Image (cartoon, rainbow, N blue to C red; front, side, top):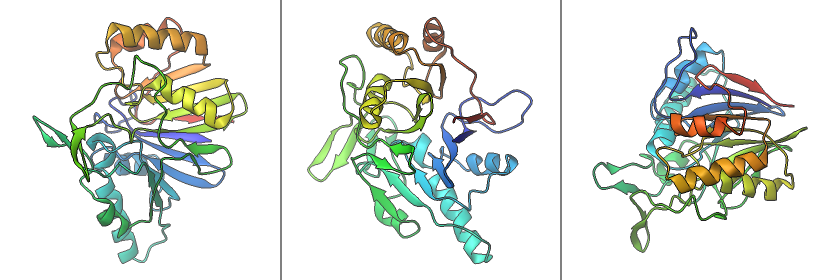
Length: 279
């Protein structure tokens, strides 16, 4: 499996890519081409073009959750594919994968809408959409985790604004937050978006789904942005006991949290342009 970072808060030195406080990865495994999250602008397409990655040819677009910094770039992949069809270029229509709540309106008092600007109905006029709470295998070794079981009492317990449901507005505990996992020869590679459901919860769920306890790497946002002492201390202790080979904490993981994690694990640099391979 090969993973390329198309969008992150950081860019690698001397590579001249564009960054934004968002996330997007491109993943290749077993002949399948997967876009994981889309940032909130078109820079993932511009960065992919510089990296010679053709986003006209995708099998899946997998969404980690519905927030702006992970879904607003969807409008640009739609535009890319519309223009490609119009010019009669070669393309492959991807299936969009996500949790059933991913396109529900999300509201935050001081801002308003912080969720997807596309509805399920609008998006499905362009791409097939598959929404599920259950794990979904994308290849023999790569799985979409579905809804994450909340196991620990120190994470995944806070709400951010409200989500609009059929019965009305309720506090949004971001039940749509999920991840994908690759079963490498040495153990699991956890690929997270923002980990609102809790990075430790995600790892535990991944271990259960994949029937594997060894962890090779965790890459993505850890949702450790000014965390409480309880959350940070418990997360560091969990990672210490987990003993992963390495960590690629990025996006919504602040410096204080990275320093704390670096005391118990091998944290490596992440930025746009980074490419990783797992076997």
